[in-house]
Image (cartoon, rainbow, N blue to C red):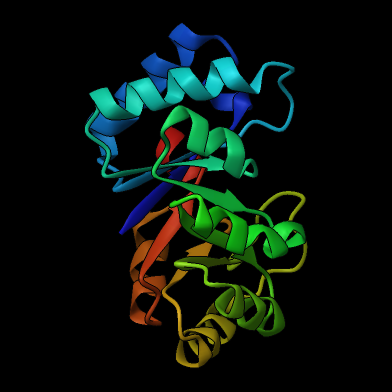
Length: 183
């Protein structure tokens, strides 16, 4: 399973550019899941709406909004991707009928996300990713996958087919990336 996460640096913040970029990525890579993530824009609503529209045009299986489960529900996203600092919101997002992906960086966060009912977790960073701290590595990914009761999506620094193959060999349910999809 492949999971595209957007970034304003590559997608911009104009509706037409978000749509154009996402449709280009869909034709090149065919991600199963896609997440709209924009921590910089003053108008998250407009960008999220454009992203959701383009994702539906592209027939992407599941579309997520990063961080805001209320807006995700209001706009009709399939789910929400919650950062590790918002794991306590998992239950609320689930009650709203959303699929929840939770960002995690250690086994304690994974166990917490499981207790709250997350459907998936991302574990990161696996490889070097600018500004994301020390890579966890493939050995830690293997241990996490074996310990987790929820599907684990490898995230962080995944930019090549070789890396995708490596994380799959360690048992990850899939991979998530920004840069892999926009190269």
